[in-house]
Image (tube, rainbow, N blue to C red; front, side, top):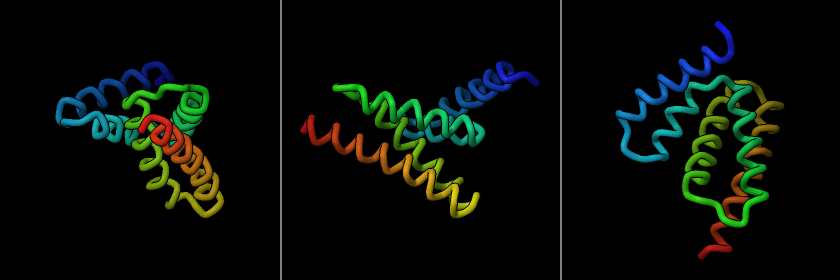
Length: 106
């Protein structure tokens, strides 16, 4: 199965799951649980870039960031200490940028 077909299947499954959940945070958690680990890391990288270059961050980005951090942390713990440390650094960077945004907007 090609990457596009796989991505479409993941999107379809995420959409089906989204109909069963109530909040955006739960939707993103469901979606990210379906991604493979490399796609999850790519999403974290995109989010870090979006957060670090934006002056205004909407709640959608915050929900996505929190869901990515949670999913990466849960998977990384089972992948070994070296990977866990690398992912923790990415997660910490996302956390700091979210905290910075919240501090600026409160």
